[in-house]
Image 1 (cartoon, rainbow, N blue to C red):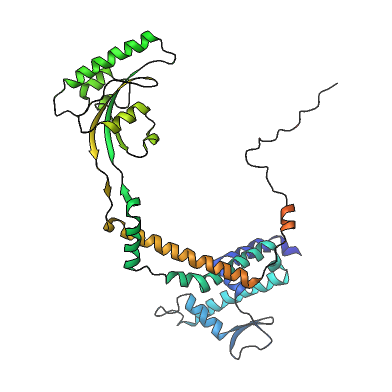
Image 2 (cartoon, rainbow, N blue to C red; image 1 turned 90 degrees about the vertical axis):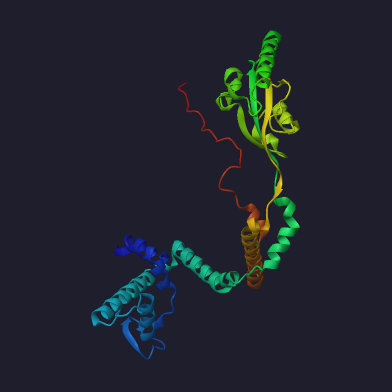
Length: 331
């Protein structure tokens, strides 16, 4: 058919769009049992008064003054007739049987069932204050904020493969830095300008050696030398200074700057989040039960032997990209 080249894109768009989908899925008034009151007829299909009124409501008919003018009414009817004519033409050309159209219609049908039978029920899920409190009490330990320690450090680095002499020179320099740090005013709990003078750690040397907070219980995620993390855990109070520490890539000094004690997060802090979590769990439980019910009622037959014989569309994960064979050479 001559029109087949341009009709499918137009009508497929109408089928999957919000308006077009309604036209595909709405009940059709045909010549058999035609409505007693209708305003237009297209072949064997009728546009009933009820259908016209429904479309008026959908297009803002409740707004004062809307559709009081005959020209407005006729414009709406023209649009309905045009849409119906498109649908009739699509059916005549079997566009409604195209896989992409059927897939879109199936998705709309599934969405409508979910909305009618599941989503409305999910919206009714309520979580009582008692449920929230019980969950908090049962899990209060998991909500604790761990102790955090803010530290400063000085690093005297050595190159890879450093000689004993290089290690000794670095040790002498860290000892000198420690003496300077001990001579700082008592109210200075980091390394002050000593870090700028001695430290090879560029990220912290201009900040008194301060490298930030370290939470107890998971020090490995901070990427520091283990001797630094171990010293940070053992220092007792702000201002305490470690002995020189030999690490993997140099010598270190560590100073405790501040401590944030472990604490339990209050119920008020967590109440809203717990309520939302419990509500989501309730909604997921409803959906899982609904899924099982729908599949059970459908009584599907699954042929696992056939499924097993379906070849994947891609190579296994981790397989190297296949290379094409080399071009033949002239003999």
